[in-house]
Length: 300
Ligand SMILES: Cc1cc2nc3c(=O)[nH]c(=O)nc-3n(C[C@H](O)[C@H](O)[C@H](O)COP(=O)(O)OP(=O)(O)OC[C@H]3O[C@@H](n4cnc5c(N)ncnc54)[C@H](O)[C@@H]3O)c2cc1C
Image 1: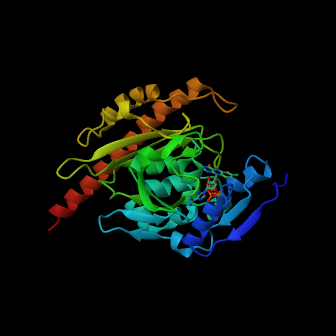
Image 2 (image 1 turned 30 degrees about the vertical axis):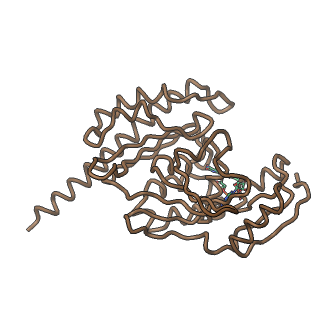
Image 3 (image 1 turned 45 degrees about the vertical axis):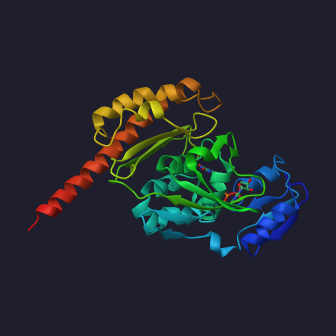
């Protein structure tokens, strides 16, 4: 099918793009086009103007933040998340999640900001930024505001972004103790997940131990925190033993729907199994890191 007629603006700056959104309330941002263009072709989306961000260079790239975290431009492609040495070092959960998206051609065009703004409940990157406790930076006519990932995803394809706002960056906190895990089940490699889980240990408040954040995706109308499972996992309690308790608790946290791919019951079962799996992964990584550190400190 072909899209309904639309106007096209290749914005040269963020201000120009924001001006286009104010001038036309029916305008939409075009980033990688991997979700928007198929929706336009199926006439599920009919923007009157497409505001193309691809020439706004300031929105791409990965920067190291002074606190040990990252600031990542919204237009950064999935492929760059997968291959960036900085992302692999400081937010390996994000790099791993991005590697599960679709196929190479899709990852070469699709963007971090596009995936978060689109807010597909089965998408990998929304789940990863939620597990990391990231902060999303939005620019609008009144300036910039920072939105916690916990407050960003509001429902099925719905976010806290206003129609005249553009997601410009994502800030991830410092990586803690190598304690992270990511797993999903899909029918074929490259398909959207039937269900998935992610876990990350992030720094606690000053003087406090790390907090462990557990997230499931594909099993509710948005990525969800598995808070009833998190209570089994403090920093000292991130152990394989606690993984089974967390997995059992996780199934009760979600409200999966049945569709042609899986029943609600099967998705609930997957959440339980995948939660246990990612917690075991995180515990194993942390133990390996600590063993490496103690060997290093004992070497003459
Ligand atoms: C065959 C196929 C398989 C796929 N498989 C997966 C998969 O397994 N997992 C997965 O997560 N995704 C998958 N995708 C989707 C892909 O990841 C998209 O790249 C992503 O969902 C949207 O990113 P985009 O940059 O292409 O955004 P676009 O398609 O350009 O935009 C998507 C939406 O976000 C808005 N938007 C984009 N950028 C911004 C911004 N900076 N600020 C505000 N609003 C913005 C647009 O206006 C639009 O409403 C698949 C796509 C295809 C075609």
